[in-house]
Image (cartoon, rainbow, N blue to C red):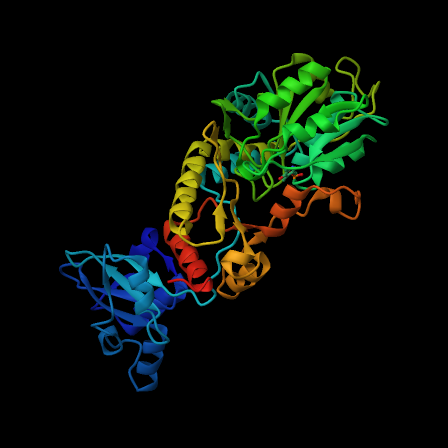
Length: 483
Ligand SMILES: *Cc1c(COP(=O)(O)O)cnc(C)c1O
């Protein structure tokens, strides 16, 4: 079901209009119906669909006849504050369009039954500011990686993360790769990472020729277990990459303590956690560097894109050098190091800047939807919702459930299949990286393996509506056999 509030005038004609007027409106708006208003009072007076008009024409009425001969002057309508569920119940094979009428008799919205009802796991939301900034790039011709938006986006992102520097790059994987390059990590070195993460974290370590060392997750936060990190240390360990998984911050204090004891580096992989707080501090600003992704399904997006934040001027300079072919700042086309082309374009940065301007609202909305999910799912036995520790502000990149099949009565995969049948899209948790074909170690990391087998991401778009969350939770309840 979708609502059309903003566009409602475009769907209205007066009840004194002709069949031709109604057809031309339907042709223009492409929704298959027109709303009739009383020409004097402007109040709702009927509904006419393309089917109604077709029947009238077949019955011998002409284009210049009044639309009244075809219209339904007492269609099913609902009042303004009728809950979503009640509206849904009024839909049928015949009734697919329900005008929503205010107490004074004005049409305020229309509920339309969408035959292909589908709630995706994640879709980006683009607005007028995005369009305006991107248009500016196109109109001025600044479409490549020079141009004002790159610098504006970097400055604003650094300030958002409370760091001194931010270096934009072409994606989140490039951010991780470049961070390792800037630290001089290479063959023979080891980098400790959690096994429950997206593949990029490990791949970036491989790109520089170093070896990823996988550690297990904590039960409480699903993040890398500091005790596991301590046990994984060897004389070859050069860095730790904690990952703020699904938007929940890692317990950073113990990790930073280990790193400073051993004189090794910490790169926070914050690809999923823009704006999350650890003890009041922004994630990404706590380690020596923090990396972010702006892929289409992340908290904010530039289409493809990434960022590295740091407080070190020296690291910032290295990152900029390696991002741009390793070209000397003073001598053009002169390369003393092996660099990369990992630049973000001005168009991408323009998108990013517009998205960043509304990130606080996005995060607030995500937290509201999380609390709604949590409250609606809390009484279903065998399900456990995303955690939030008392020292953390989680940004809920993905809303997650852990399914205990014994208690819930079915497995994670069965729940996913049942939801898909009802048009609700989900994703399983990442498979453990230490089990992936390209890494396949003989380790057993029980917490991470359990989470990975029983965790599911629920629809998590920034545009997700509370009605949709209610609907999803009601479906989960039905599927579980509850009521
Ligand atoms: C998305 C993601 C990345 C990679 O970002 P891309 O922009 O897709 O390259 C890295 N690490 C984690 C944890 C991610 O979720």
